[in-house]
Image 1 (cartoon, helix red, strand yellow):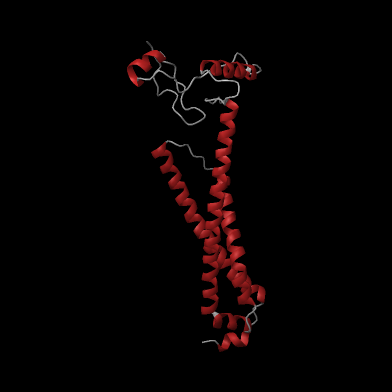
Image 2: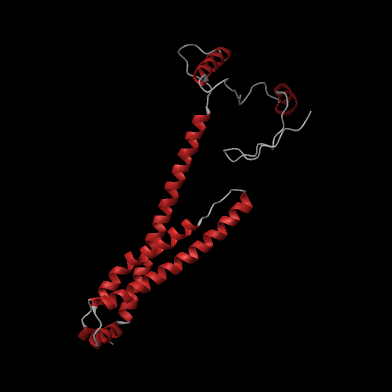
Length: 220
């Protein structure tokens, strides 16, 4: 009896120290009450011999399971490369899923910004007409509304980043999943929020800058 040296978290996120090692026959007799094994871990003598070792394992298991040459295997063999490929596939799927959710949220938020700016243009039609009448150019009016749209988008982005920072800390403390937030992540988020403001605020700003001053002064 003894205590193994601490190893910490494995590559799959499992605690390698939270287990008990005992003879499998003892576990079958006193704990599980079964006569079969669910998993068998094997180690090749070298990386180059892994393929040959896999062939030998397959042949041995087929012999022990009494499988005829035409029958399919009733077992699975997974190598470390297979596990890594599975992890990469899961990461890619999660990245695609999160990107899709983020894109949908950005589109919805951008449409909201555009609607707010269109309402603002309608309510400030007389103000826009006065500005154009006293000498403001189309670019002056357009840049004003673009700036307002960017400010709204950046405020929303800052609020989202704050919530993201708090939620990542909560996830790490509650579930033990490590999170990494860098300055580049926050910088990219702020730049993307500003880009959304410019993209969805361009049409309302363009509409305001193309307003006829006479029609704007007549608007009640």
